[in-house]
Image (cartoon, rainbow, N blue to C red):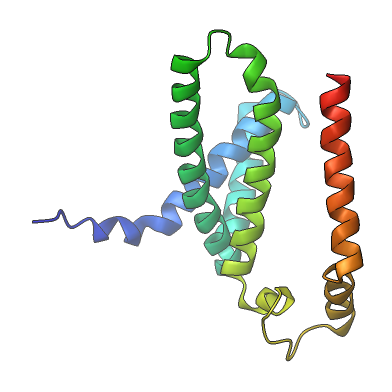
Length: 167
């Protein structure tokens, strides 16, 4: 029989609040924008966490990103563990891997935007464009033209070639 952990979902707003508070407090403590006062840093982090908690769509976006970020982090950890066993000097291998990880993280955040906000789905290829901003639809059509996509692909291939040649 499977373990019923549906009660965990009831605490999602609290978990989101604690996550935002912890991240903002750590950033404020590290950067020292308002000084080294822990009370002021905690108060500012509390304000940001309450603002985050007030908007349900922003909280839902953060929950979606957090789940997929955890999946991405687990996969990256297992991949790095595998590489550590296979390659003799993994330090040379992990430098370009950081760039790939950042790109994957950006893709996860973009996918979460389209998953969380239904109004943004109109800007995906093949989706209904009714009710969407006309300027953004024109930008979408410009980007999805064959000539633009082939130019983007050419720039990506050139960047990879430059990276390989200059390395």
